[in-house]
Length: 301
Image (cartoon, rainbow, N blue to C red; front, side):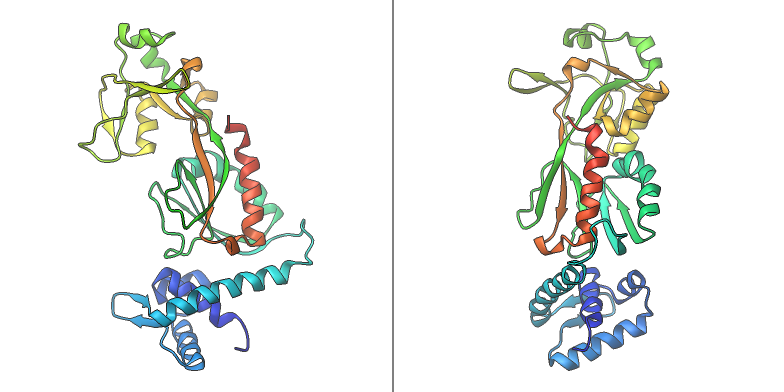
């Protein structure tokens, strides 16, 4: 192969399972992407992709070829940058996913400084509360809060995200400010119940006990299944909430929320920087990982 462009195009189509989406992400015409794949298949002498009107899937040969191509692309990028100044500006595309509240409250406000230092860096930022598929959706890296169940992924611990108890001033004026765990019951406090799926049992109010944590089931005025809505319900005075300090810090500073029971905070939430493969740790990914780690450090226990 004369250059690595064909491998890059093939890998992007394989990861995004779409010629159209791959072309958009690469800034190429769809027809050019299709032509590159045809030429590549002719050159290697194998059909790499199954094409239908609705989807694009790897063949068995294509799957084996993809993993070798991905390693080769990572090696090529590492080779290209091995003599580069570590402080030199980054360039190229970086596709990242992270929880919405983390993106909104911490990462996006700090991005202008990162982009000013690296104007040739192109960031595609996905902010969702679902578990994305790094390989199938073409992500270079993701930030995850909570356990990483997929053992095939490479997860580097970033730290433990501080969790706090909070309520709006209007809510506290109505129910009183709890000073002890007993006050939660005697003052008849309410909490906003968060559930992933309606019909599921809420987790309850978490508090430290001995070497671990227990939960106290408090009544609630409403249930929500979105983290953003959960925060908004707390701001509206619908009940006590337990959430990450990073997301609530602006509201605490503005006086829209007040921390309560600071000695009875819930368990901190593990934060991880996740890539699909060790060879996915390109110079761009490593730099973004270190930047993110420093950015989040004030919010870790």
